[in-house]
Length: 261
Image (cartoon, rainbow, N blue to C red; front, side):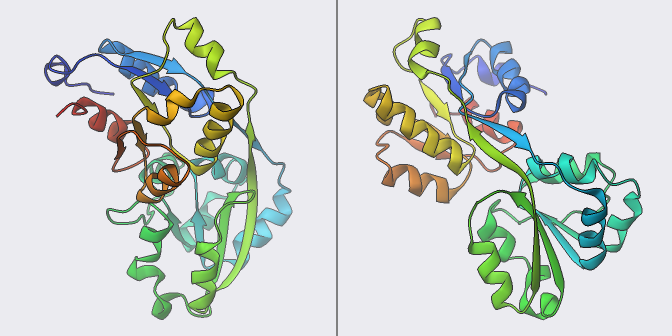
């Protein structure tokens, strides 16, 4: 990842807590450390892939006209089990965010539609390719994690689509102690906390309350959608909240570079 060190030279170095799953934070942490920041590793959730039966998976793919991947985590458990990748060339493929699109492109899926400007369910639903005119009576397969929001489902059904789902992973809270993490780094509170999903945000609130870390409610946040910012406010965060353009590392780093401006 390219870092503009001239820009970073004008930024006070920050203590930044990264809360993503451990295997998804390494590059971001290394990039932040490379320019002198303290990257605090505090993975609040882990991703557990679910076992999918290849024959059942192929039946669902054959049935579909359109496939929507809601997260990068949904890709490996599904595409990793498909031998004939040509099947994806016959479908319209959508991803909710740029990071998910990048992961799909890396799997040699050549065309992936993503929201324009708003990387969220709301942004996806604004795409003309998912308007009622284009999806009425179409078979849409949504590849997602267990649980999650219902908004995508309700809107696609309302537009006349037929839906089926693949739950390809689940999110599990870790047993990490934020108090111990901060003590190990010899700090009281971080300067910033990066939040990239609703499940991470909810887990953070639980940790704050169970460990009596109420000062973290005043810590500035970086989130990856307007929806997350609103939820954070409702949950009691009173510090500054800034919204990264995307959930990928580049967008988060770009926001941090100009944090004090």
